[in-house]
Length: 467
Image (tube, rainbow, N blue to C red; front, side, top):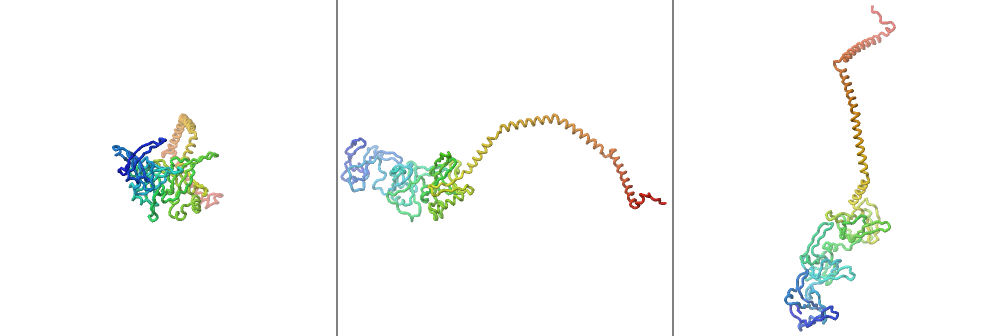
């Protein structure tokens, strides 16, 4: 048996237990190593080990395996101990603090995974276990001195397990940590908030372990989430757990669950999305006036916003990935609805997506076009064209010759009229002579009329003799 490669005792015997499930080891400690009989002393077998965190115990490939000890600090003495299957990650003389992290998923963490502070390895994961109700994973970590002084009441923890690759409605996001965390996973921490509101974390203090750094930063400022429901009458394909809830470009929360709701009486199928919204992200003035928005004034404001047209809508975030997100926006012409703010969680009204409405309208138009008898219309049009062609042939065969003869007769008549009215024709000479005679006759009638005006008695007595 060795402590820091110094021999402190000798193995004197090996025995099987009566049920043959364990091995009993008898060890004789040296007189100078009586302190290793403290009840919290740890023992394990040193042998070659290869793991994600590294390689250890290679010297035992030549010298053989041996027992190692880590001296405890208690004053009481024991003679029976339970050996460790794996060497302890932290020895009793190592300075630092232990902390307890609570998370919904272990991820790729293993005992010995690094604990990082601003990408510098500051400690390691000791182990993990499930909580009593099985709802979360409890992770024990150790932060070495002097890095433990940076763990305060405002410290936030998150998974730094290898490569964080996200391909969602926000596009492609890649975040990496150290090489050790890429191989075996890891945990990272940092402190947020003003230093005046912080105090050093005590040993065994508990923290929440978030999935990403972004989520950890948001939890530090957001406070408790308000859970709401949104009911959609359309497919939620492309909407995934964790998809953002957007309000005019500000991410107010995320999708936490997607369910199907079937009305057995009407056979109507609705898709219900559960959202976690953080009212504190609505701005400083909202936080100062309404806090988390869970009071009477917050409910009154929500009624007013819904009356002004606040609705949820499913939108496409990335054409490349097909991922969707939920948008909160104002639709002034939306149908008026009433909400029950006394119900938990509150159900917010929604409106259909504009693109999907257009798709429905196009589908309706296509259906109507499918009902149009284009084949029959084509056949009728073909018959009409054939009848028109036959009619034109008949016109060309019967009417065109007659029309041509009529036109030739008319042409001859016009030619005769032109010949009659020509400049040197006899008709023109006779017309001129008749016009001259007519002029002379009119002149005589004018003289007669003038004479009768002067001598009206001449109508009775005749024209008097000048002699």
